[in-house]
Amino acid sequence: MGWLYVVRNAALKEAVFKVGETSRFPTQRVKELSSETGVFGSFELMYYIHVGERKRAEAYAHELLSDSRVSRSKEFFGAPLAQVLQALDETARIFTVVAGTRRKPEPLPQPMLIRSVTCQVCAAEQNVRELLINVRVKCRDCGQEL
Ligand SMILES: [Zn+2]
Image (cartoon, rainbow, N blue to C red; front, top):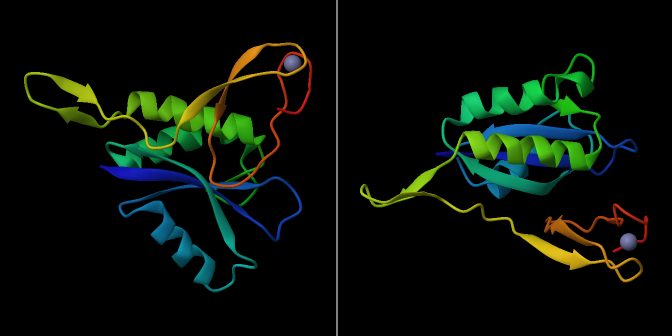
């Protein structure tokens, strides 16, 4: 078992996200990233999932996002955050970590929660992911900030 994570570099103006894998807990990996030489600014952890076969899972997620890859870089993507998160969730569905007993194996639930929110304006219900940083989320029907 391992982890895939999404970070952003707070120093960058554009929405560029790094998607990587680690065998240790993502918060620890992100600390290292920020102290690596040649990296300007610090990385903020936004989202993570656990996966089986983390190297293959990472390759799969990168492939899903390959159209928005930032040139010359393997792990940075200039896609909207929603698209990056969708790619990770899709990867999580495929590279499931199985828990439970041998007779009753069950997929291990992901640590980051999705909650249902009702729009105050149009009453549309939608699922919103709980991220580790504050981001503005808009109603998909009317555009109102949730
Ligand atoms: Zn709405």
